[in-house]
Length: 144
Image 1: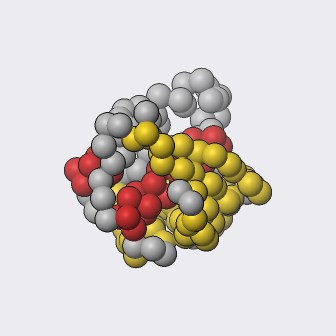
Image 2: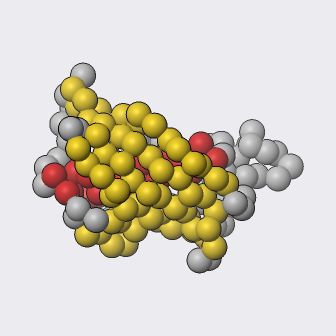
Image 3: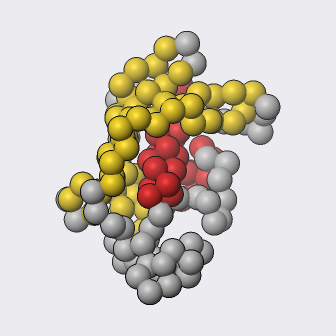
């Protein structure tokens, strides 16, 4: 899935769109996506000027965005302007290694459970086949 199709599934736009490509997707099961991390990211000048590191919260956000795409593909529908996909919980988040400019962040999300409008995912982010972040995320779709 290229960026043009991703834009149909996510309401996020620059500088908050954190998924560049979907590598593989199996509806109802899992997604593998990527985020190219460049020195041009708007957060690097302040985080940190002497040693740029991608903020962990943005890695988790990228994983949530990939998970949202998986959910919409699983439901076989596109989001509309009256719906927002919200975080409702993050458990067991661990940051194992810093993500630096030039890294290619591989985002993996698997559906653990979907019931009563609540989605739970097991997620992990990798760089060069090494785990950098893992967590369990919970999200829900709500009308605004």
